[in-house]
Amino acid sequence: MSKKPSSSGYPEFLKELLDAKSPTGHEFAAQAVIDRYVKDSADSYNKDTLGNRIAELKGKGGPTLMFAGHIDEIGLIISHIDDKGFLYFEFLGGHDHVIPSGRRVHILTRNGPVLGVTGKRAVHLLSPEDRKRVPERHDMWIDIGVNNRTDALNIVRIGDPAIYSDGPEILRGSIGVARAFDDKAGAYVCMEAFRRLAKQKDLIARVVSVATTQEEIGTRGAQVAAQGINPQVSITVDVGHATDHPDADNRKFGKFTLSGGPIISRGPNISPLVFDQMVAAAESVGIPYQVAAESRPTGTDARAIQMANGGVACGLVSIPLRYMHTPGEVVDLAVVEQCVQLLVEFACQVKKNQSYTW
Image 1 (cartoon, one colour):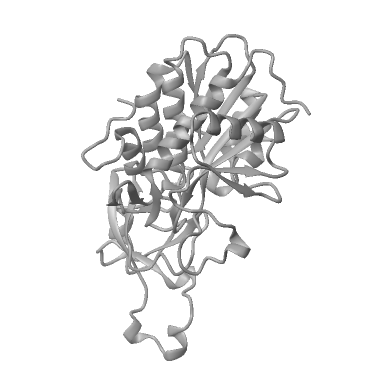
Image 2: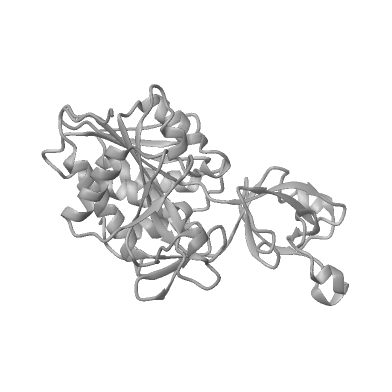
């Protein structure tokens, strides 16, 4: 079941994660997918007060290796309903203000998803100066087809989250498009690698794989999980910027191709011992890889995990992605599979008395 493709061309597990509606702070649907696919493979399986899902393989006395991939996605949260029943919102996570208007969204209410459309003044009604201006958040709203505030409040509540409704599809070959590859793809990699490691008879490391929450608003789930697990070594899997598209200056952003293999990071957030072991793992199984320089704490769960307790030796693997934080994120599913294989090989190389102190 681990690699079985669905009729969409996606592995079934990954497709269900991508379909799950899980804006940050409201990860219920993605949690349920993780529960269904991972729980039976684990020696122990737990959840915590931030909603993390924590799967453990006991291993044979080796150091504790933590995998982390976040299951929350960017979204909106209803903050105001006007007298005519139009909904105003704040952002959950980082948004480009040119993206939200004219989108179909699903508002996650107590009675299930409600369809809405994000609106703003039509271009015909804008002055020449207004046409040049990026709309502010308060210039946009959500239309759910009602006529007044009372009717709207019978359907939605202040604080209900919303997401774009775009689902996964195949562009061509193994190239997929979906909202929330950031970071459902990374969470899938961590948990699929875990499921394959569960079949290994001679696994030395204690492996704890975590589907983390609230990464998009400050790596909050990872911070709590790492404190509780207290790993010696950790690998975070997230997405990184593929820069092989127009208007990406490689002098500023580095050179990373969509299909060039996993991106392995180097820098202060990354243990040099973990980096070397990650490269050795990739080379030992013939996985192509790209290297990214990170000059400061990364914008991923690795920034929180590294500083847990007495410190954790961290690695970061990124899946190259185009158009991050839009409803049309693009990745190569072949690279997603390479990332799974890379984590499996890394874990299998961990030795019983291996130290990551340097």
